[in-house]
Image (cartoon, rainbow, N blue to C red; front, side, top):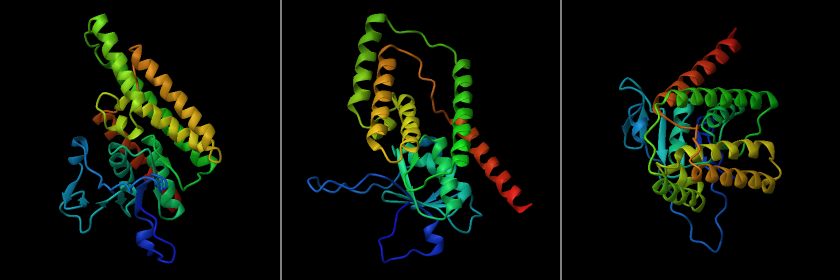
Length: 261
């Protein structure tokens, strides 16, 4: 979702409908990066009907719930945010910027927290931060339980495993966050770093240097775990993601019902 330039004030509907990745200001010494339209991964294509750059839930929808545009995801449907933020994460985004009112930004912040993404232009209250932490703890616990139920896979030969894991660890450190998020062999490991990015930016909003140090320390820790063949529990699988979306939608419905009583 994107900000409008100063002097070109967006309409009320538009102002609550735009998300975009936070890529920072481009360096004057580098050519401007070409804007890329977000894509849908296989596990998300079944949730939408796509017509051009428009996404619908069913054929009965009179208007799209979201639009895919270069470096932007547009929606005015707060209930669609969990799925929209899953699209953002699948495209390697680590943080977003949101246009809209406080209610919309809060919904985007909670949906982003579930995906380990940061919202750059929203400062949550301590109560909202506590809700996000509770959500992350529940997700982590569900993932640990699911990981414990998985049947163990045959281990490779020690010499082959050592070489392969060392190469994988080095690849993890050499690639960017976005590249690791797209790498099938490193997505689980990157999800741990993504959570640290979200937490440290909320913890040190005015000290990016301190936040960067904690993020880098986490990267190094995860790389060591890869090299040592430690189990990475932060696995993202289709049924866990679907359950996460259902629970967030349920929580949002309860919040709305409570406000209308």
